[in-house]
Length: 194
Image (cartoon, rainbow, N blue to C red; front, side):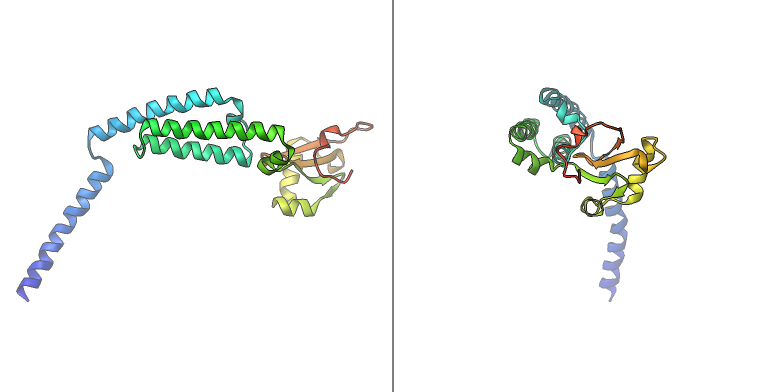
């Protein structure tokens, strides 16, 4: 009985030491690891900046689902470099492969309508000449209130002023104002009830 009481007493005394050591390591290990992260962050930032400049403006454009996946992947790769999970050379290779893949797929999608629809989907008309297109709205998980809010952003007080509302590839809504006698050629790539 005496040994078990002594053992419990020792365990109780050691517990705060383990927690205290863990907290110290959680907040600060050593200056070497701090400098490692700082240098990796600086170098990885410039590598990513260089690759984005080379890859063009599409990398920075408003995001489609395809662009979003690329952006998240770039961010994840950058964090792995900064935190030392991979070397700078490995990370730079991964960043360049991701950006090259984005460029190749974007170029291929530009050349192939089928691949373009797979990668980017297509715009969806959700409102046309005073009526909501509920089937399209259900597909896009969009409410009437969201469409009304977008119409107000375009400073239109009456839905009779609106020819159409289109959900674009990047998820934004575009409101098209009615204009008498004007053909709507910008709507040609959208399935709509014209």
